[in-house]
Structures are given as structure tokens and as C-alpha cells.
Length: 162
Image (cartoon, rainbow, N blue to C red; front, side):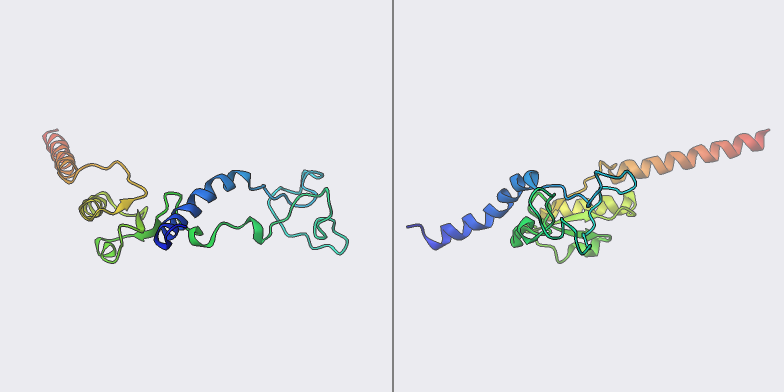
């Protein structure tokens, strides 16, 4: 018989692998009578009629959502990579992150300078980034700003010369 430690390690890895094939098998639940009328979209709505065949779960009618379709509790809400997502907006948000179980998603509104700083610290600590946008290095970013300022100065000088 296997050791308890080996069984625990096996059960921790297994649910994620178990979810992936089951996701493909999961049925797309259709709204009742959506195949019959164009005005009724396929988006799921719970059947509530007193004589509804779908509500009664009569054979031959499409399936309704139930607890059996749910994913395993251990992996519910996790990113497909297996990490728990943490939303990051500032460098200070990186302090309480565990690199083994959590991964960061940098907020959309974060600018290039702060994004570069967050990415540098995350790489230093070994934290996985879920949305690694290909951004410029800080030096390149500063050089671009300087070039733009020089161009604006040149334009102003040319206007004054006219």
C-alpha cells in the first residue's frame, strides 16, 4: 500500500488534470424553446413553467445545470495554470504573495513605468505573471520621452523662426 504522503501529493495534482478533459465534455445548456423561436436566445434561463418538460427533467429534453457538472472544490476559481489569481495595481501589492500558489495579474490601467517596476520585482521574487504584456524597458521608455520632448522643442523653434 502507498504511503500517505504519496497519496496526498497525488491528490493535489490530480484535480486540475481531471478538470481539463471534463471541461470539453461539459454540455452547453440551452434555454428552453430557444431552438424553436428566433426571438428566444440560447442563453441559459431556468425553466419555471408548471408543465415545463425541462423543469421536470423528462427524457429527451436538453439537460439542465446541476451540482454534478461542477468542478472539483480544490481547483474551483483557479487559473488554468493552477495558480490563484491576485490583482495587482501597485508595487506594494506584491508583498503578501506566495509564488508557489499565487500568480499576479497586473491591472489594465497601470502605466508603462509602474508596469516595468512591478515586473522587475515579480521576476526577482519568482512570481508568475498571467498577463505579461511585452513592454519596453525603463531606459528605453525614458529615451522615448526625451526624444518626444526634443521633437516638440524643434517644432517650437521652427514656428518661432517663421
